[in-house]
Image 1 (cartoon, rainbow, N blue to C red):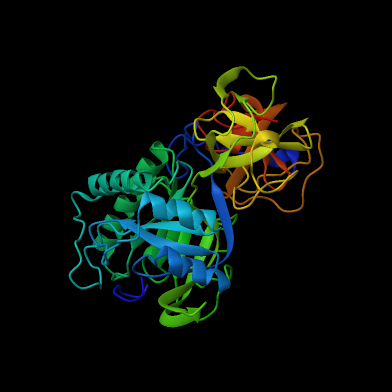
Image 2 (cartoon, helix red, strand yellow):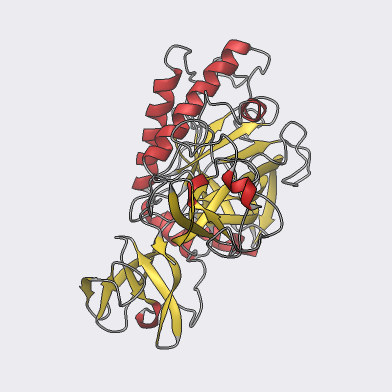
Length: 430
């Protein structure tokens, strides 16, 4: 990427048709652990080969960017990363930056990048799995939580080589399945004319697992996230797209000059924790309410690691509840977060994205088919950004409905989580 790399509904819709809930490709399910939450970033971003210092990131708060791509590992990572530590991730996140984890693993056998370590056709599937596992290990070491997106970097290659194409697709399919198996979001960075093109060609193929998000390289100075020449607007349509639209060049903010690529995002990025202290001795609960069982007692002035915020019964002046890294919840009223009674950025709202498994899925104004529909239907493979679940009209094998971040509802039957009969932990009840 850049400097040292090659350039980079209706009731009827719900109830009829042969589509079944996903158990395999292309929409492989994710099972999120208790510590997970997802973070969606919409806006301008940049990436640079070596992570800047904390002082440089502080100066660049004067820039129009609020997210940065960071190279967390991979056999083809080209720059040393002296700044990239757990402490740096925590400090930069507290400044309000969103982080975009990039892992530069094996490259295509027909890559145009000189001196690359390449995958092999016989081993592409196992290599994709092993690289995904290593990417997650690197992410965990930096405090990047489950529910985060990790972008596998696939540099430009000869798109006319059919054997090479099939090898790359096997590798990326295995990457996605292992990323999902460990509770992370699968994403790919690829050149529009090779990797991105080929992923789009097999978007609905049952032979390959579909990544949740796509970040394309197309240096045409156009930051639009739709109208991509080789990729339908119906593919990766809901918080699943990013574009690197300008290659390496210098920009200066706050007196600091960096060599960067320009990006625009509406896609999942990294989730981290945010440490605050409590004002008094409090309990944590198994859900966001005092009606749930008490799990722990937290002494006054202790630090708590918050991963996301959600709503629950009002305590004091706020209805905000904080989900902690162990999956328990505390009322925000007794925590020294900066914003009362609402959410405290940069802490994200709790959400859990899953791919939808049928085309033209209706979004409802409540948890059932009797509720009116929202305008617009969800294309197949869209991300359902689920905030909570509750019972409603039975569809297929389940009465569970999912409330999305926009306030709409979809039946859980067509959402690729772990179950199509009951609730899916760690999603809270509405």
